[in-house]
Image 1: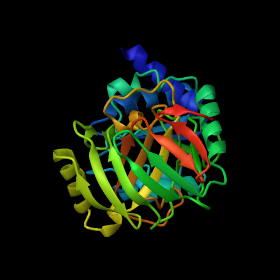
Image 2 (image 1 turned 120 degrees about the horizontal axis):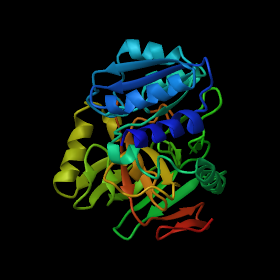
Image 3 (image 1 turned 30 degrees about the horizontal axis):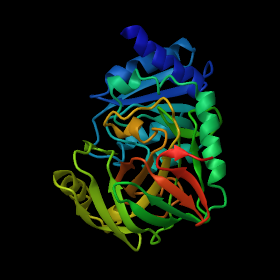
Image 4 (image 1 turned 135 degrees about the horizontal axis):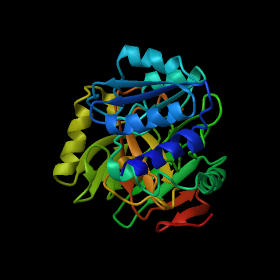
Length: 321
């Protein structure tokens, strides 16, 4: 089993991040994810990097800022990797590190099953090709409509918002991604989302839903939740932040990793081919204007995606591009 962990660590450090000798590499984990941090640290040392392993107290939710000493360390290295219980992706600390030219990857909610999965050790040249195809299909798009068999019917606008291609190849200064990789994502224009979201896959911090969660959306914000205990839990997580911005429709993402399979964990489930995910809360770190202190994604299965009212790029969960 140790060799399997080492294999995944090699793919992350060598293939995905392209770590070079003498680079300053920071591995950030917490007390619940140390078993992933250590093989990554060991592999960075194998590459003759100037590596540091930092173990912190787990955060309490996705999008919560790390301690200041961690944020400072992130800005002062060449490369960081963050296998943590809760996501550092949508934090100001991560954003500032990227803006400082640090390249890095987050692995929020990482588990043994995901770390050892085919999606983690995928052929990232193939993943990159698929991500870039989807990115091309979304270029110059203003309006997107997402529907699904379970009743999702959401319209949103992305005109002028930057597209982010999570290819898994993080070799250049300031590059950032999620591992395992494989998605295209964008921050919709605030106030434009209208309709109904139905999460029938996985919701971050909740897992794979037993009953679809229906969210009514008006003027870019979630206004009501239906679907039993999981809908209640999602609403309470958002209310617990104490900020109305938590209900902002923050992200549209499209999964592009053909090796990813639904596991009930958003880190990998949002990368599953032929799925869409939509997030609520913060999008200030990838082109939006909303700072919320929380970012919660949910997966829509078998979506149909129509752009600019004229071109269908996914139909019933099958790519048409």
